[in-house]
Length: 212
Image 1 (cartoon, one colour):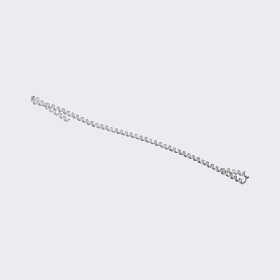
Image 2: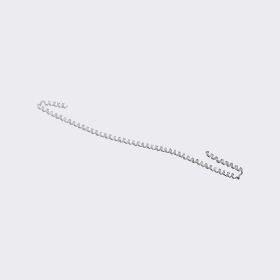
Image 3: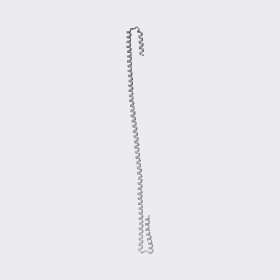
């Protein structure tokens, strides 16, 4: 587009300067060429400056974006680290609570086992005491019964001996009376019968005591 405008200017100046000499025309062309080259060089320089400025802006933008991304990345990493540390602390706290609850449960189970063992031992001790007490009771009851039976036997023997001794004294008196000859025959015969009855009654308790 610029080149077309430049050609139009050339044609216009050429038409206006038909009467000019060749040297003037060549000088003007050379001047116009220099002006055009200067203009192109200036425009090129301006364009290059614009391009450099755009590049610098883009680089600055990229650097800013990179810095921002780096900052965001660092913030994100810090956030992730904080969240990980919080989760780790939470997990450790939960594990500590779970361990404490498990240990408390174990202590309760151990306490219950100890109580069950104590109850079992107390029950066994109570049963043992009952059994021992029962056998002790049987022992002392049997011993008491034996003593009572022996006492009763001794008492029976004592009364039996006393009765026999009394009968023997009576018999001795009867014998002495009969031997004295002071009694009549009928009285002697009655005393002898009484003596025989006394002897018989003296033997009977012995038989009864032996049977019992």
